[in-house]
Image 1: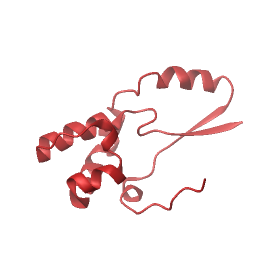
Image 2: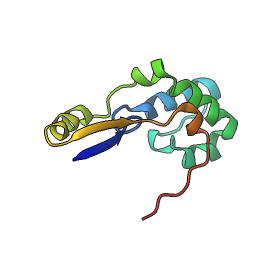
Image 3: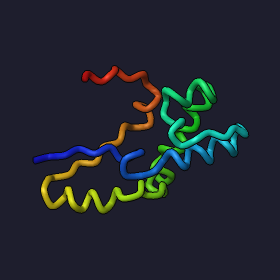
Image 4: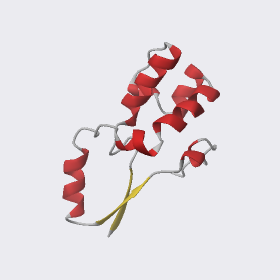
Length: 103
């Protein structure tokens, strides 16, 4: 069995980095759950969101993100049962509109 797991927001808590970026650059306080594209763009604008994405998802910054609580333990358990693939869109892909996922 192969399991693909998204890195940002699933393994690495990049939302905390986004909260800090928004507060430091824009002086706006947001909650981590508001940092996804759908909720965040209306709050900070598309230009700021794209700039934030370029900085937060840059390799060094992304790898420095803290672990989502419990993620590494869960990954260890999954790794005993499956082949794990870690995924993360390139920064260029992050600013493109996404197709809605089918239910």
